[in-house]
Length: 331
Image (cartoon, rainbow, N blue to C red; front, top):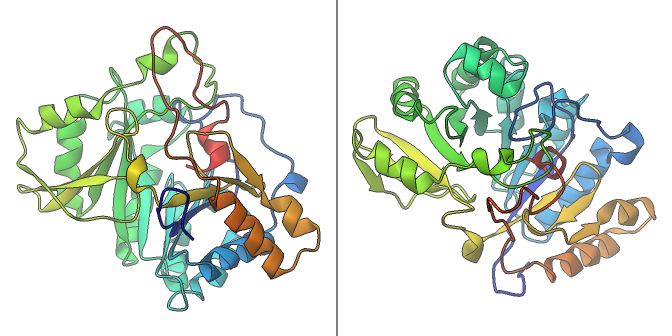
């Protein structure tokens, strides 16, 4: 599948639920209302859409949420998708908050998952509880360690927030080196009303160009050609032997090389995280359409993929670039 700007679409991110057992301050409001079950695609429908994308040339699938592991019977989907590895699919990965990872790590490995991204924004337990509004850092760390023990490569994702965790990044680089984990830092994205009050969105924004300059005072960072198929740009950290990634949608966007689209748990296909244009695949699935019609609907959506996102953070407005929460689109 080639979009209007010549980019091959080889990567699909699939949200299997909008629900989460945490309420991270940059992701969702504390009093979130979740979707009724009837609006969600069944696991069988999610599998069918994923199969169509693989048939059309997608090589990588990432399962996201909300928190994907809270979805009932989600391991049946992992096993079904894993059966496609080596048959058009190169990689099946997961992004998780880690709360249930200790329970499922071995099953994920058995299904064919080889890498997981775990969200850990701080190594301070009290700060972690404040950021997540209810999380227990020890439980998440146990999940990351269980994934490592099961043979999964672990990458820690941390959203960079001024006055919240910006004093920890040296320690996180060091700790990830000790644990054998890679680390990726992420700029806050202007999505959804987080219920944090006027100015909160801009106050959450910390340019990673500033963070990288600070880190260079202690660490030797050498730009790396390593890519995982996503938007992160990586550096090798000489002192730890691990990689440090930066996802910078605001200070240096990655639209020119975008190879990704996102399927929500309701069957809505977003061709760009920072745009509202979307295709309704749920109606196609539930109309009795055959595989050819489903393929045509996907191709028609890819033909509308925009050149880039509309993200902007400006102190003159606290309006999000897109109204939906990250948890709805898929983290």
